Amino acid sequence: MDEAALLRDAQQGDLDAFNRLVLAHQSRAYALAARMLGDSEAAADVTQESFLSLYRHLRDFRGGSLRAYIMRSVTNACYDELRRRKRRPSVSLDAMASSDGEDDSGRAFEPADPGETPEDQLARGEIRRAIEDCLRRLTDEQRAVVLLADVQAMDYSEVAAVMQTALGTVKSRLARARANLRDCLALRGELLPEAFRLEGEPSA
Amino acid sequence: MKPSTSLPAHDLERLSAFLDGQLSDSDRTVLLARLQHEAALARALEELRRVRGALRALPPIRLPRNFTLTAEMAGRTRPRAARGFVFAWGSALATLALAAVAVTDLAGGGLMAARVAAPAMPAAELQMAPGLVPAPTGPEPRAAADNQADQTTPGESAAPSGTLAGSDSITETAGALLFAQEKSSGATATPAPAEASRLGPPSSPMPTPTAEGEALLTLGGGAGSSTPTLPAEPPRESTAPTAVSVAPALISPLRLIEAGLAVLALALAVAALLARRVRR
Image (cartoon, rainbow over the protein chains, first blue to last red):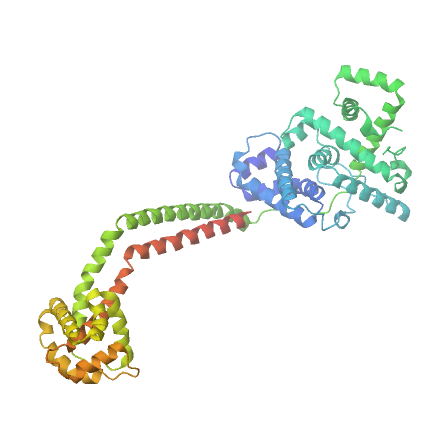
C-alpha cells in the first residue's frame, strides 16, 4: 500500500495504517533528533512525542510531503529541547552508532566493507567522531540544515519546507555550515585518513 | 591556503549550490569559467565536496526501539486533552463563582451580620434563665465571667470600681444591673434577689482576694446592707453564655461557600496543570 493510501486510512482513525507510516519514517526522524540533540534518551522522547503529535493532528495535514511534515515536527521539537536544556550531551553518539548498512530511505550510508582491516575501522570511527564533534559546534540552524540536506539528502525546497524558511536562506545557511565544517575538520586533518584529509590549515 | 570561510559569501553559496546542482544555467557557466582560472576557488570546491561526502558517509544510528503507537497511547491522547480542558474551565468557573460570592458577601456583609446576631439573642436569653439558678462552683469560672462582663457593657464594667468606691455606689451599680437583668430576662429575674442572697456566701470564697472579691465578701456578709444587691453575679454569668452562643453563628454560610469554592478552584487548577504536564 502506498503512502497516500496509508495516510488516508490513518486520517480516518486506522491505527495500523498510522503505525506503518511510523515504521517508514522513524529511522530518519530518530537519526535527525539524535544528531541534533546528541542525546539518545532525549532523541527517543522527542521522536515519540513527534509521532504522538502527528497522530493527534493528522486531520490537519493538508497534503504535501509527509516526510517534510514529520521532519518539521521533529526539528521544532529539537529546537524546543535545545532551548530547554543548554547543557552538554550526556550520552555520546558513539554508543548509538550502528554497524547496520542502510536506513529506511534505501540510500546506503557506505556499508562497512567486509574486508576492512581493524585500522580502517579505527579510521572510520575517527572520522565519525570528528564530524559529529564538528556538527555540535555549529549553530542549531546550521546543524539542522546540514543534517537535512547532506545526511538526509533532502533537496533545497524540501529543506525550506521543513525549516519554514526561504530557499535563499537554506542556500546561504548550508554554504556557511559546510564551510564551518570544512574549517573544523581541517584543524583535525592529521587525525583523519588521507582520503578525508583536507589540504592546508585555516589561518587563525 | 585561504580557508573556505574567508571566501566571499556569494562564492561560498555558489560553490555549495553548484555541488547540489542548484545553480541556474547562466550562473553555472560563469562559475565553471572561473574555476578554470582560480585555483583557490577550485580547491575550496573540492574541500566542500569532501565535507559533503564525509557527512553522507556517516553510519546510520541504531533505533533504540520502535515508535509505533499502542492503542492505549492513541486512545488516551484525546481524553487527556479533553480532561485538561475541563479542569482548566472548571477552575475558571469556580474562580468566577468565588468572586461573585465574595462580592455578595462584601455588599451584604452588614445586613448578614445583623441577621445572624438577631436570632442569637433569644438563644442567649434561653441560656441565661438557668444561669440564674445554679451557683458558681469555683473562682475560675466566675473570674472568666467577670472578664466577659467587663468587656460587654459599660454598666457592668463599672461594677468593680463601684464596689471599691463604697456601699452607696455598690447599691447603685447592683440596682442598675438588676434593672438590666429584669429587662433582658423578664419574669425569670423576679426570684433572683432571694436566690442571689442565698447563694451569695458560697460564691464569695476567693483564693486570692481581689478588689472585686472583697466587694463580694462585703456584699455576701450582708453587713449593713439591706438592699438585695447580690444579683450582680447572675448578670455576669448571663453575659458569658450569650457570647458563646453567638460565636458559632458568625461563620456564615457564605464564608463556607467561599472557602469551598476557593479549594475547588485551586484543586482544578492543579489538576489542569498536571494533565498538561502529562500530555507533554
